[in-house]
Amino acid sequence: MTPINEMLSTATAERYRQVVRATVDRTADRFAQVDRPTTDTPAAELRRRVRAIDLDAPPIGTDRAMAEVDDLFVREAVWFHDPASMAHLNCPVALPAVAAEAVLAAVNPSVDTWDQSRIGTEMERHVVDWVASRIGFVAGDGIFTSGGSQSNLQALLLAREAMTANTSTSTIPTPPPTVFATAESHFSVRKSARLLGLPDDAVVDVATDDAGRMLPTALATAIAAARAAGRTPMAVVATGGTTDRGVIDPLEPIADVCDLEDVWLHVDAAYGCGLLVSPTRRHLLAGIERARSVTADFHKSFFQPVSSSALVVRDPADLARASWHADYLNPEDATEPNQVDKSLQTTRRFDALKLWATLRASGAQAIGRAFDAVIDLAEQTHALVAAHDDLVLVAPTQLSTVLFRWQPAGVSDAEADALVGPLRAALLAEGRVLIAKTVIDGRPCNKLTLLNPDTTIEQVERSLAHVVATAADLRAAGAVPTGATGATGATR
Ligand SMILES: *Cc1c(COP(=O)(O)O)cnc(C)c1O
Image (cartoon, rainbow, N blue to C red; front, side, top):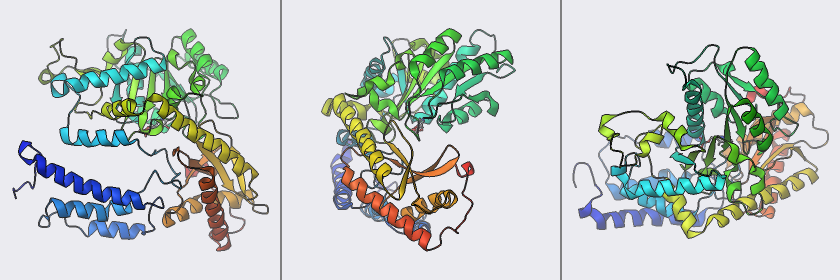
């Protein structure tokens, strides 16, 4: 055995086949046995097992190392395809994409310069053009990113650069430029503003309606107020499917305001992008083609493995605002289309291959139908929760989330609120049903994010029965002191 154990090369092609086959066999066996989202191994025990391994110990060889990975990690994994896995926006993944991921791991391309990827660059561009046309951009462009957070950051960087383009420096003007979003928008909008050197008050929360959607009239008022205070509007971030309520800001009237005010409109469709291929709900994103930039997370509603996201722009020239000159990347060679010119990253995964494989294998309609299925399931679950004696439906949602609280008759608001966190924690410790918690209108509540198109309403019903039983047990066991003062928005 060589000192650096084993390398994948022409000489080791057979060994590669053997190692990956054995690894895939073990993982497939695990998949075949999954009957719960995760195990009940205590957190302290997980940490102990990991720390017990000395990374400087004598090496054990590939076969034993991979058997150890199976025993240590895969056995304890969180399985997002399990019907009771409803805590986060992690989706079950399309098989062709998983197979494409295996190709990526072995070939290990980087789509930064053309000479490192050649046809890979062409394929990424073709996929991006396809996404742009689904959005409705006539001649758009874009780039794959590591996720919605990075896509949002890049969008706001481009908007800031566009704003300062006519000035001689790229320094941030005082008073600082203003970004308009809502309190329901993703936290990465505020984080991005901070990364871009803007003060926290540069992001203005525009008022929403009762469902959590941006009010276009309030947007117009907020922009006018900012201008009156001497501030320049930099961007409006509309959300195409908020993370909690799954509601879609009214894109057409927001675009009207942005056109009138000449402000960059970014649509964060990280969650809702699956609607782009939905056979029945595409209209929910009507107006998205009027955005100047769009975030789409294929690792949320296109059933792609992490990571797979894109930032797509209406005007290809806008992407150039992020480009930089580096001699070793041959930037002057105009015949070679270098994706690095459009990206915040340099070395970058060829994630587009996974979406390519999925589109070729199953087609866009199948993806759209799968997203439709989870939205249908959420609608059925809303009805189930609303009719349940012990559960309260906190707010209606438009995509695939369900916001609820356990609160039978006789349980005070304060008690119910105080149980939200412990309920989630108790369920996670047990590993049979995974749910989340959040805050809506200042009160904590629990949340399901449904993303498995094969989950049935009967399975959701069984999971909810377990949630209800666990909540009742917790209360009976005195997990929450009677008359507790409920936690507030501070839990977020
Ligand atoms: C999940 C999400 C993001 C962040 O995406 P990541 O891929 O997790 O970085 C941004 N915006 C919205 C609306 C989201 O739901």
